[in-house]
Length: 393
Image 1: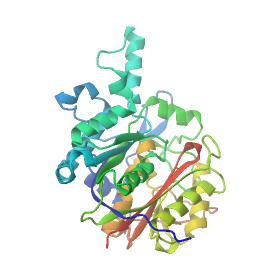
Image 2: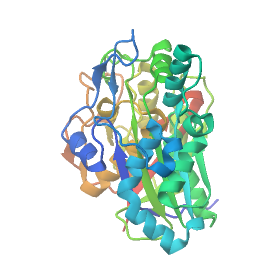
Image 3: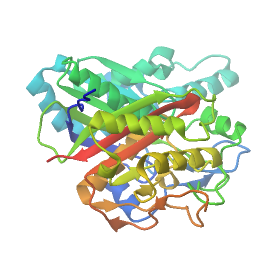
């Protein structure tokens, strides 16, 4: 059987924010300098942990969008701002109806609902500013992005836990390949909220200190917030393109990965097949690497099985925290930066390494020619997705 690779779609612009900074430039500068945005926090009373909160305040939405003014919507506006010029150009070039939006989130407006619930408990009624359909609902995030970008094509939100922001690239790829759109605004955005922090604590997978992916003494993950947006076009000048996407659901367990790494392996193999590449074509892996004992062990087995033990591997969650539905979005920025810069960032906190995990972990920033980078996102319920980004010829 002859397998035809999917077209490579150029990524013409991107923006990012995280605990490392409020712009893609500041985030990448901090990442390559080996800094972390994780700090001890009493955000969730009674739970000692390190969290990755945005370093600066977010501006309110413009008056015309004031009804949607939540923290997640403000993040969307922050990320849209540096993309205004390329978005306007895309809408003008293709027509508003030919520009789609696919965004990922695990929390959507949950943080706003938590504040509204606290106000209700105190005053006996919800605050005037709160409306479920505009403050909490997932589609509200898409509505805000539509208003800010001018895009009028198909728009929806993907929420498959921690694989969400890799899956939006698959959605974009399908919309483009089907001829439904000529450009897609994709990405992921998530905020810190009580349910997330307390939920991970209840599962026993939240570390009391900054997480240590792939380290011998790793004991859990750290939660962060932020996001990233990308403009993907059918044909345009760009340094990096979306080459392939692999998705699977092994449904091994509600929260635990398949111990043998079979779910992650299947996603990576599917991405390679979709891109028409072999294992030897991959120059770097941005690992999901959460710092939890089971996830890191399963992913390490998967990487070894599919790509071998020599490919350089980095987990960036010790720098940003695990951003849940937005994790793969910020990590897509890191994967793209490796190709653009020819440089790998450090994997923080992994020493002393777990000797049982046969990985070529990068502990200091270093020069590395990257033609193709694979980025993994492995979620609850066995929802796995791997995306390959490649240098444009």
